[in-house]
Image (cartoon, rainbow, N blue to C red; front, top):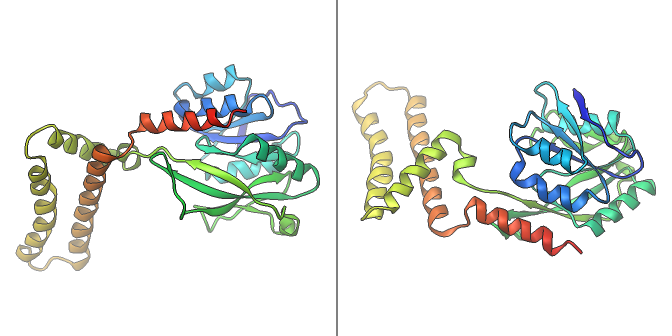
Length: 279
């Protein structure tokens, strides 16, 4: 499931376990911030950018993910089977925990805690959201991680037999989302971003947007339903929902381009965030 590429683990320090795939733009902050105090272990899914070069230069350990398993499954396998120190903290490339708090997490695990929970603070377009926080397990002793196959979104859990030994104190974890319609919605996001951008560079942008998206995407399915007698309700519903989805994505692209931080601005904001917590 995991194939070693470079193994530089000390065997004594807390291992910060990071699943990666083409994280060149974000992994540098993490490597610089934690690399001097902890063993950074990348579980890489075949990155084709500079992720692995940055990791190698920073002295990190790299394992290659084999197969098509859910990302959390690789973390569970590493924590339960491959860890050298027996102390692990799961961290995505776009997540952050203060070093002082991570030091306390390490102390809790060394003192016998099976797992440590973190309260998650979500950041959207460079702003911390106050209403979307939830709690997840991130720190684990060897053998105490568990994967729930019935919950792919939050499949990483504490092993049932270890739940009674969870550390009672919770720590704060920041999820520094890098948002853009282009990245979140694939081909349709890329197309709508380009089209909305062209409208905004021309005159009467509001009218162009209304005609292209609102009038067309709402009116056309209704006209099609009226003219195509005998059409199946499921197909008609699919047309309507698909066009409403495209309208929503186009509207998000408009708001993003007109009022919100672009990806590079978000990256700069998060780089400052790491720098502000350097000492």
